[in-house]
Length: 70
Image (tube, rainbow, N blue to C red; front, side, top):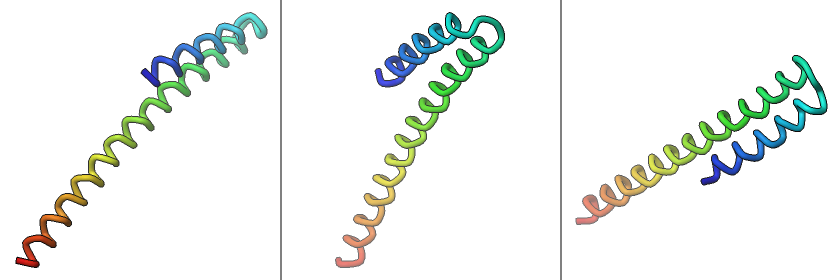
């Protein structure tokens, strides 16, 4: 849902650039807007993977400390 909102805003901003800067300049700015959505999406998925790995490491650490105490 967040990525959809980012994409919608980027498309709106990009279409404004197409009107304000006709020609290649507007097209390049539109491309930059949509490219930023791809980078933000990758960053979001990367953060989710990092959080999952951190939770797994924490669970492994808790399991090891329980085993050591027994």
